[in-house]
Length: 315
Image 1 (cartoon, helix red, strand yellow):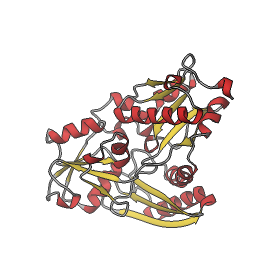
Image 2 (cartoon, helix red, strand yellow):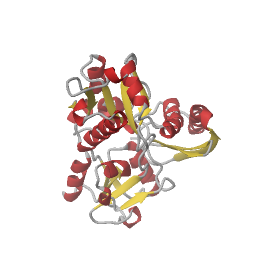
Image 3 (spheres, rainbow, N blue to C red):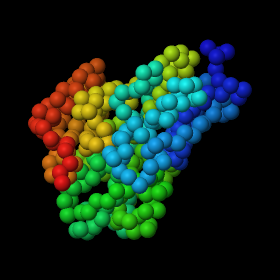
């Protein structure tokens, strides 16, 4: 394989979005590959690709197409050979990949918790009645309204820096970010507090980085196998099967988290009405090898309890 490794003359091209967090994730991938194969930094080229989700900032994601908005242009670039791999935040990834692409490499998972971020309050419990909260996540919106129906929730899109600026400008009194993203940016202090999963169950695959490649690219497959994290893959097998069976998208408030304990996997799942008027939960365990089946079974059970129209928006 040595002769096939990337070099400064023929670098491995890594596709990513252009936000500071996306770039940090791409460079983490390059650093791990460089260390695994004793390659210089110049053997990798980070290629920024703007996605529809990045360009359109003034509308809710559900209005313009959901999760694929952050991946479509990057995947197209890979299919035509402009890049070799793509680095993604797994919570943004659709459950199915385009024909010819595969997603089978995950880096070790970061902190899965949601971060409470505010210039005025230390904890969610400190937010006064009737205050305005900002979030672009339907999951966080619904979870928040389940706990605090008195609060007003406004659309709050943008990268970490944009959302912090909006807080300073008074658009909202508080918002939520992912602790994983803050840690990867080296800014964990931005969080006033982190919410335990028992308080706010995270998005499916939150904190995980996935690396997508062309199905027929055996050189890249061999390289990525060297940095793949099996425990993260086992956890995401359950979570993403759960999401797939629920037809999860940015239009459906869904939360899910798998944890490992020896040879046993525990999956916690949650579905909510978009207006936060109802929340259904489940908590089950199974052997690790049955992770995907556990996810599908849990989703089927929650859907049966929910009935028709559970995810519909009420006017």
